[in-house]
Length: 124
Image 1: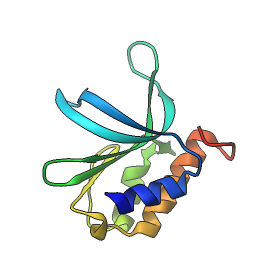
Image 2: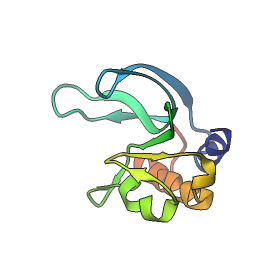
Image 3: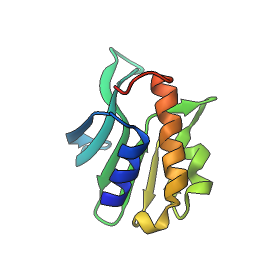
């Protein structure tokens, strides 16, 4: 987890890093390290503060959440094949450890997410 944290933090220089705790997705308790705060539009109701990239330890794997879309496709889907041994969802990737990932491709994806969310301006 530390290796992935280092890659994400390095690819988003100056980004805030917050710990999100609570009941998410299907009512499960989660602790997620969130990088860069964004305003996430909701289908019903007001937008909410959320994270651009999230990293969580699950019972049997690690999860990386990527809340960025380019050309109508979540970046997690666009990069999944190049990242290594991952299982992808809409905006998430699951993997056993950092050894399963191509860390250079991970950094590329995170920088891409940062450009989508913030352009070339300062980190949020």
